[in-house]
Length: 89
Image 1 (cartoon, rainbow, N blue to C red):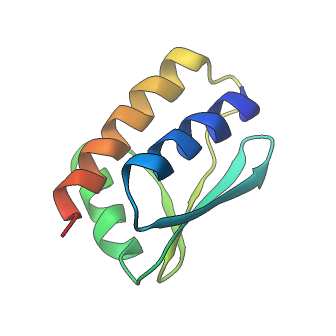
Image 2: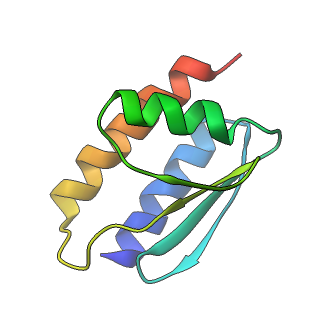
């Protein structure tokens, strides 16, 4: 599932040009932005029920439970995509 999560985040990187990097191992994955918008993305995700962790002003970390499946990844990334769309310039 970790590879699936990273692949889906890389798909989002193609859609949102302010995403500069997707990195991680297993299910510990980070998403980096080209500007300091992590707080705004974090709050937009929380408002939609997705818990993420801001590790730097321009980076978020994902730490899903080890029992997560692909359908839950899809659900989480749909929420993330909504959040990213809401803060896009």
